[in-house]
Image: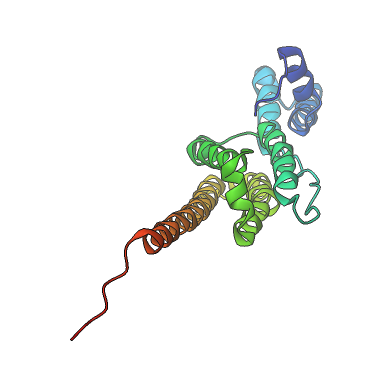
Length: 216
């Protein structure tokens, strides 16, 4: 899921970022204070401090969720979800991942990848419209919204220390999505097991000798 970017690209991205531009604007204000004699002998500290304050307070860059292909024609739903999942992975790979969400994010990615892997498991899921609906909703709506809400909220937490943590909400949302998708896996497994038991019952009824009639 990681994107390829070298040191030069990362440096250029930072130079063009809102954070650096806001820091430079505050630093220029500090230089103006130097020229007017307000900064005194500690002008380097004043300029650096104003730059740092501007860089920290600037709203972080926000990457909008990508457009998804959406539902496909009947019979191709899982293929469309699989393609949108690849788009989602690229989107998440370019985001800043908070430490508290690393585990739930990795678990969710692995779970979605396993459920959407082409093969007999996907064929079982395709036979359950509710499971297909939940997978599509997770990929196209729930996961992108969780990440986008985190990006929008985390900056405000800097202005209001002690407010509800954006990282905590993101981690909780990812955990809930993991739980829902595990439920999907469990329901598909239960359907497979029911089919197996039904076949066993059918074979038993076909091969076991009938009970002798009661002669009493």
